[in-house]
Amino acid sequence: MKVPCSASWLIHTALATLLILSGTNIASAQVDTIRLKDHRLNTSALKPGLRQYLVYFQIPKSPKILRYWLWLRNTQIENRKGQRVFVTSQHWYGSDTMSYRTAYSVNKVNDFAPLYHSETVAGKNRSFNWGADKIVSADTAAINTLKGFSLDFTSPNFNWNLDIETFEMLPLAAGKIFAINFYDAGSGKPDYIIYKVIGSEVITTYDNHQVDCWKLFNESDYRGQHATETFWISKKGHEFLKEEDAFPGGFRYKVKMPAASNSLLPRFLK
Picture 1 (cartoon, rainbow, N blue to C red):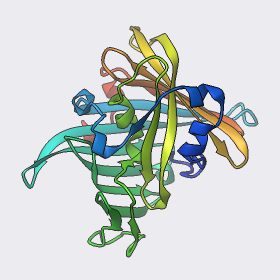
Picture 2 (picture 1 turned 90 degrees about the vertical axis):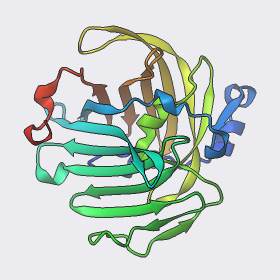
Picture 3 (picture 1 turned 180 degrees about the horizontal axis):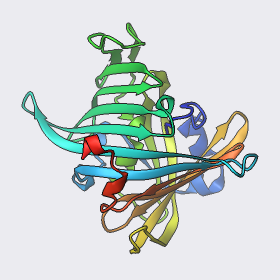
Picture 4 (picture 1 turned 30 degrees about the horizontal axis):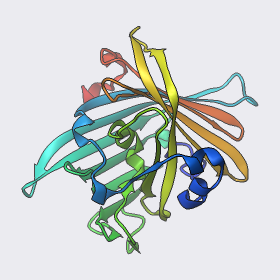
């Protein structure tokens, strides 16, 4: 999952095939492989609209410092060239201009296949045209820092930058294990990433609602050290409500804000 301070700290390096074969618990369980051709994502579960998240870090070595962002993800359905598409824009707002970042993604409605992705971090833009068999830089973007980039695929894949939206469309159930063919545009190569449903939990949201959620879990090796991600996704509405990550040297949290939190929305976006 991508973060504003460093896009590399949460890169997963283990191949899914190795993960599936390692450990009796994984080996004995059936793994649902999430590929575009199988149409296993329930795209009707992805509801258009604005989502707001409070994202913050806790670093034990700096207990008096709280690093935080306001994260906006807005998904809409549009018609482009006779095709219905999801258009998702992201804005990260931090304590200074260097922490601001944006992303813009276009995906097919019927299977969530990526068509286009652009992101700007610390003023540097990377834009891509995304197909089933390859991804190439969108050289029409004047400020694209990866002009001339091209990568062939052995199979179609999903945009890892939209993992939250992907999780909301998964057929979650007790004991399920998913191998999702994700790609982080412009970085490395596509890979199957393992996510496990490790149980359920009733959590209290900021607007004081009790919500029964599935807990989705991922673990990886980060620079030779163990890192984990846990996601809470509501059973009824398929909403991504909370995330807790543990990585070498600290923790990261994401919490969905209630819809009534208009005061967190920058004025020019209201």
